[in-house]
Image (tube, rainbow, N blue to C red; front, side):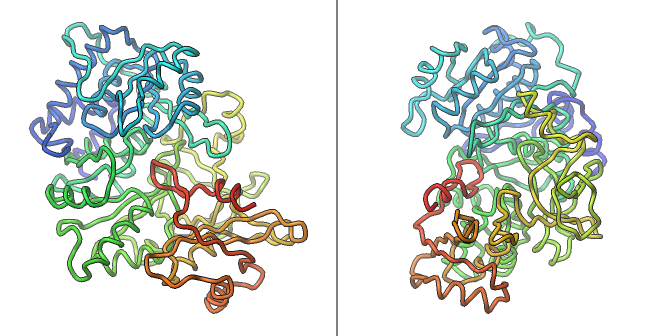
Length: 512
């Protein structure tokens, strides 16, 4: 990281980071969307005017403001205006509906709720009206226009970066979501890790293809503020439109998650030998496991580097591959943690395990959340030494690189033998007639669980049979006791709307 970026990374609050970057490069672009640009100087000046408008509405330091907005320049301005006031903000993914949104409003005790009006055919204002009957926040629309006021009414910016000012929501795939508590410092630490790992410069142009309401939003914004380069925003990601914008604005860094890598590969394969985005030099992301074959295919066919990382709502950036890692490390690991992030691999009782031994991943460091809204959930999630218990399984190599081998709930127990779903998925991704794959355990009276492979096939592929799949896996060296006993071919795997992560619980419900 450059000396300037190091100094900026020492900022205690988001608004301090804005002030410093605006002072250094006020006229440099920060955000680009279609034909609009917001500079770093405008982020500061317009952000203060929006903050003043919010202040006149009654927003105060520590007050909770929920917002459910698409990825727009206005959304980022609103979020930073709230950091200027020192309010607590609760971003909600814009695709969530009454159940999830109502839960978030109730649990956070939101006093204000910003919505986009009618967006993509859904009336968010009407939904907010329904929900306000139960929990009455002040509802206001924040899409094309934002509150505006005179910055002279504002008190000084908040100075404490360790106060809880963010409530993010876990996906809630099997039960109600959990409200994850973050501070400015924890999110700045995560963004600093991302910035340092990717080795970007002021000459780069990034892109935000995922909802800014995701915890990766401020993560990415911190990186832009540290290095002073812009990002292209996409209100709703569609590959055809995105490619045109990537080319138009000379994007050098793109990505999001494994699903995005696959979409880029699909486009590249339509015109082999010609770079799908001429300026693109790096794909980067996280949020879901990366099969090694995806890494090799991106590098081989697209001619760009791919670095992948490991994060979660509770800890937005844990490890990240770096461009100068070895090919083997980039393909087979999740990268290394930054200074200040401790990774401990433990057995079921919390006892540390040596390098190279699989166990549960536990985390401690500045980027780790402050806990959950529910004190009982916080108590259950942290051990006696303050390590967050992730539920992920993996090991750390002597080099410090982390290898994830699954999640506790993704371990299939067949006749008393533990089977890693990820191991089988990685092999299936190499099969030419498999576009994507998810492996799940299904209840079985004789075995306890049986192994079920659920696959998407690429267009034009010959239909797969279970015999073909097991024969292929045998040839790849998979142990007999791990072979799938059931195959399901689906048109599309169910995914969430943020980072396109496969929702295995839906597959278990469908095929159990």
